[in-house]
Length: 228
Image (spheres, rainbow, N blue to C red):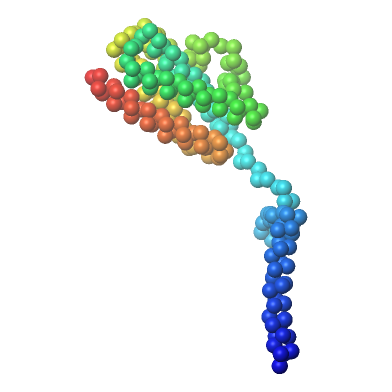
């Protein structure tokens, strides 16, 4: 009788021993083989097991992706130039704080866009009709950039530069609202173009530009309303 009970206990413990062995072996097995990556085959074709170190390919860049980043660099550059005109022309502390925030954020974004383009083998300067714009002056840039939404004309920039005090504040706010609105249009055009804006970094950046500049427009509209 005792022998029978021992045999029954031994039979019951055997699956536990096997299970423990499998659990102990799993980590080593997974480390040695790595994850299994399967690419489904086309209709009528078998699936294919890919190497464990396979990495997904990034979505292809479109011409619009490159043009958006190159154009936004120059667009941001004018905003930074507008903020630089504050020196000696306004003593409004709220406006100066807003300007400092715009200048810092857009300078950081310009550096990001330049790195993004360089990592993809693209120049930071936009070329138009086979013409290299890298050697142009600021005024020439503005003349050729008029096709970019929201860019201030040379006349608007000259008026801003000649103004001071309350008039400068008004021109700056109306001009920067116009400028920010143009950036929102550029983001919309990017996402409205089929096959564009699919790169994850580009998508996140453009979305941040949209939300950030919408928020700043609301702030500037409130500041402008208080002055009127």
